[in-house]
Amino acid sequence: MTGQTTRQINLRFADERDVDALVRFNQAMAHETEAKQLASDVLTAGVRNLLKNSQYGFYVVAEYNSADGQREVVGSLMVTYEWSDWRDGLFWWIQSVYVEPDFRRRGVYRQLYDFVKTSAAEQNVCGFRLYVEQENTAAQRTYERLGMTETHYKMYEELCES
Image 1: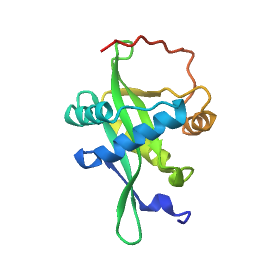
Image 2: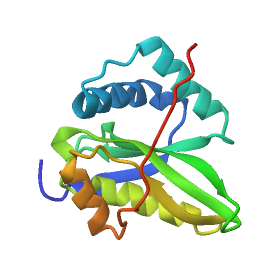
Image 3: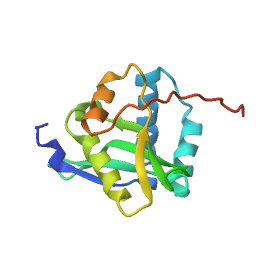
């Protein structure tokens, strides 16, 4: 693989053909960042549900086009929405970010983020947010290089039992 990798990347909104890659990426990301194993059936249903319900959000995929014409999804992210009454606009939350290890540090995430920002240009989007593991300093540096800043908020949650 050459340093020209980013020139062979195609960005697009994900669709049903990407389900297997998105499930695999989410499982790998959960394992890498939190040492968690996600149940394939639940995750697959969740990915398909988002793809069928655009009011929840959307996925973007980065597809590598090899010299022999093969296409392979090598990165993805998910965007979900949060309404801000303070700003009369939507925050787009970037989640489930994953880039295949062989494609990291080659500008794939930058391209994904630029695609999201361009897609937001004609929407009622007031900003972009994401959360990142406290120990994931490499990702934090990437987000800062792209112009994002750390906020003063802490995050709390309570999960509903199913």
